[in-house]
Length: 208
Image (cartoon, rainbow, N blue to C red; front, side, top):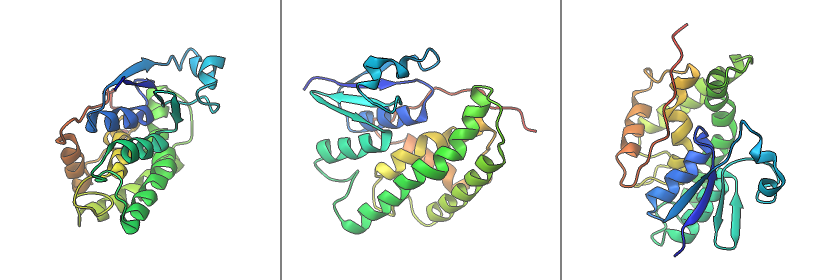
């Protein structure tokens, strides 16, 4: 099969989410770096792929899929014949959807936003992102103290892929994970999966 094309920005956790899923599934793919600082994501040719002007986007033959969570659903649904990553059981599927919503909500507006502030030196009030991160990590810690994977399944799912990148890189936003041993153990389990690929590490800000 021809390689899937992944349009990404190397510091984007959303883009890493798609890259990680492609690698875990063992799919051939090639990465196309999009110059976000230069505004390439707002150029007409990119907007033709994703009118929202965001990475990641994948091209699989004649099909274009945008949005990191949508990409996870598509890749697992099309290429995972075992249905391990996206179980067909309605209860498991519903639990996965809850975590995809968390990835698009408190994860994006909590740890991801705090990381953006520190990484790109953007001035913003971090009280709300820090509060959202604390609430999210408390829920994750509670769940992962009782089960290996977020959706409560025997094997990892796209829920774990969706939450991994910005959780693992939360310290880059001034959000240390020292107080969350279950989360840190889950990160280690994810990183031990065959096909795992990490995201480039950025400097961790000094403690206040």
